[in-house]
Length: 465
Image (tube, rainbow, N blue to C red):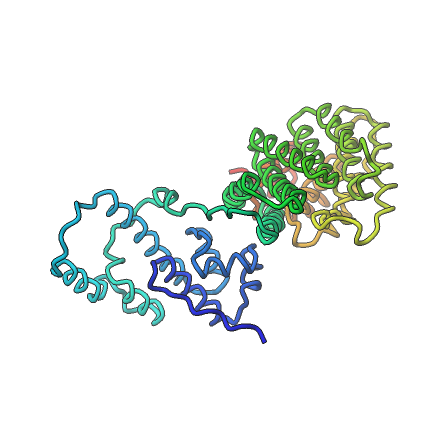
C-alpha cells in the first residue's frame, strides 16, 4: 500500500502554511500530485516539493494552481499574504533595532498581538480561508510590497554537494514539461520566466562533483534544457539569447558525445539563422548536423534535411530545395518505432509534413513554381497536429491560408485563416504573429471582398494590436 503523506508543519513559515493549504485543496479535489502537475505543466515531484516548501513558488504559479483546483481565488488571495509576510520580514531585518535584554514584557506584547484576529478579516470568506487568516494573525495588516522586491527573497534551491541520478532526472522532467508548455503557449510570457530558474540550477550542477558514470547523462540533460530555452527565446525574438543558449546546448551535447542532442541543437541553430535572414548560415548548420548521418536516426536526418530545404528555398534554389525535400521523405520513411530518444517524439507525420510544407511554401511563392506540394503538406499538418502542438498547427494553418489567398481562392482562405487565428490568439509567439502579418499583406488585394475585409478587421483587433 502507498505510504500516507507525512503531515506538513504549517507553523514554520507563511510559505509552509500556504503549501499545506495547497495540499488541502488538492486532497479536497481528489487529485494526485501528478494529476495536478499535468494541469499546470509541472511534474508531480515539483508539486510535492511546493507543498513541502522545498521549491519556490510565485504569484503566477499560485494563480495557475488556484485555477486548476477551482479554488475560486482562495489560493491567490492566500498567496498575497505570503508575499506580504516576506516583505515584512525583509523590512524588519533592514530596520531591526539593537537587541534588548529579555525581560518578558516584549514577549508578552508580541503574544498578545498574535492572539488578535485580523482587523480586516472578511467574514464572507469561505471557512478554510477564515481559519488560515486567523492562524497567521497580523499578516493582513501589513502594507503590500512590490512583487519585484520579493524576487531576491525567493532564492534558489541549493545545489547538492554531489550530483545524484535524481537530480539529472529532475532536469529531464523540467525539459519535457517546459517543451510541452512552449508548444502550447509559445515562447513569450511565463514560459521563459519559468525556464530561467530551472536552467540556472541545472547549469550549476556542472560545477559540482558528479560520479563519472553520470557525466554523459548530466551534460545531455543540461544541454537539452538549454536547447528548449533557446528555442523558446527564438520564438520570443530574443535572438541573441537564443543563439547563445543553443550553442551552449550544442557544447553540452559534444561533451556528452551525444550525437542525437547535437543534431537537435544544430537544427534549431539552422532554423533561427534562416528566420533571421541568414539562410547560408542555416544551411551550414544543417549540413554540419548531417556530417555523420550514420550516427543519428532517420527522423533526426529528416529534420536536418528539412532545415536544408528551407535554407535552399530562401536562397531561391528550387531544384536543390525539391531534392532536399525528397531526401527528407526517403529517410523519414525508414523511421522505426522506439528507435528515437524521447524528445524526438514530436517529430511525427504531422511535423514532417509541416516542416517540408514550410519549405515548399517558400518555393511556391517563386515565379513559375507550383503550389500543389505546399498546399497538400500544410493541409496534412493542420489536420494531423494534436492539441499538444497548437503553435505548429497555427503556423501551418496561417501559411496555408496565405498560400490559398495567393493562388486566388479568398473564400477558402478565409475559412482556413479563422481557424488559425483562433489558435494564434492563445499564443505568445512572435513567429506566429509575423506569419499573420504576411497573411495581411497578401490579403490586401482582396480588401474589398466582405469576407476578407472582416478577416482583416479581426486580425487588426485581436492579433496585431
